[in-house]
Length: 195
Ligand code: IMP
Image (cartoon, rainbow, N blue to C red; front, side, top):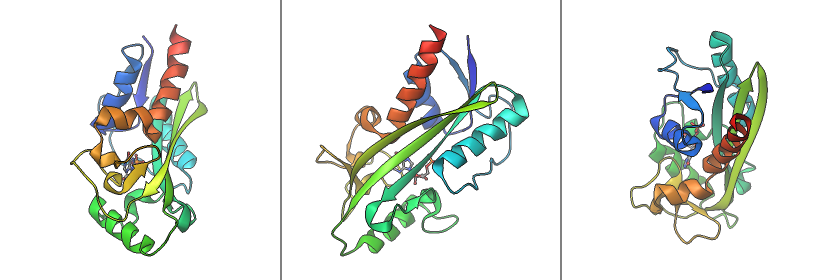
């Protein structure tokens, strides 16, 4: 069976990809592949970071691998925080710090349109290939949460829904989300190759 290293130790992400692949491809995390250390993420685009992370694995293993990078892009902020979404409020900030900063920055602004974008980079035989997922919606004026999700979920309401990502069951979020769509494209590609 084809084996790929996923450049992450985030259990949530690994479970999501394994479920989508349904046993057709074996996925190893960084830890399972015996890789340690911080992977640099210093590019200024999602595509650049996804490539950088996947290349880090490829250079050490010469095993086919993939990585992802995600950002929240807010129209009224010219696409910020974008590739800097994780550290929008500072180097070691929390999800709550990021949301507080976002709500304060958008205070009084009428245009609250935003999207989440995920880029996945698959390296096969040293050649990168990209898969992208995007979901459009708006930034709410305050948190709405049932305790689901993470990150900016309490303040992001996807189009055609009346609830935030943090009020949706995970399966519903995954079926429409940026990462869910990128994973679906990646898994379609891999499944077609292994048939
Ligand atoms: P990463 O590239 O997947 O680590 O995502 C970067 C940052 O984007 C995270 O630290 C979160 O703040 C935010 N983020 C990524 N995915 C989501 C999501 O599905 N919901 C809310 N925030 C997210």
